Length: 254
Image (cartoon, rainbow, N blue to C red):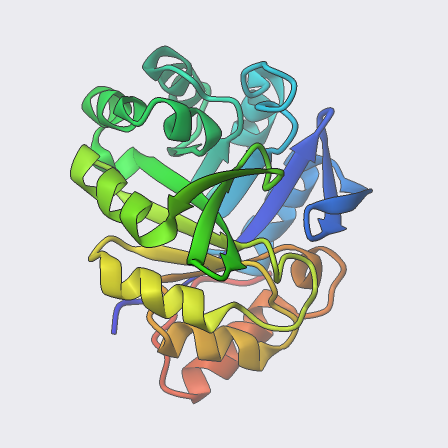
């Protein structure tokens, strides 16, 4: 088993971190740079920042807060939201991001994945895949989970892998913010479809949920609410996973 990464996710809107349930009912959770710095201290392995309004508002990710975040981060971080060209992706990496996350724009122009991989290297290109359950299986949604695409999750993951994606960020819209546990069936289906690293997202509420996802094949375990509001300290989570045989990264904790 690979070393499992613990990854807080910070959804950003209007330059502030927000959190909701099923992508709805957003409330303020703090400043991106302050929260990013806090997670460095608490022992997170990476942080993901997603500008959740960028695609819907037809604009690119805000470079300003990305620069502020980069000034305080001591661990890798990913930025996504509204990236529709390799030039925008390169700009964010130059601003300090380690990786970029593509979602809606890649669904509309799949070749964007290939072009970004050529510009940055596959290791810096994450494809975010937001899925909902349906009678036809797991279907990919765009625009922050609001727009069904009719595309199969498995088909889409295999396609972006062939185009040069380096990692999959898999979010269950059905479970997002519910704290009922990761969608293990979706995770297992994605794991069978690709050899790429998979970050599991959506639904974490207890330490046991992270353990289940790690055993189901996740390489990274992402959450928001349980970290933002102090429900599960990252250090305690790593201790719990390690005690159950899951390899975790160890660093100096404040």
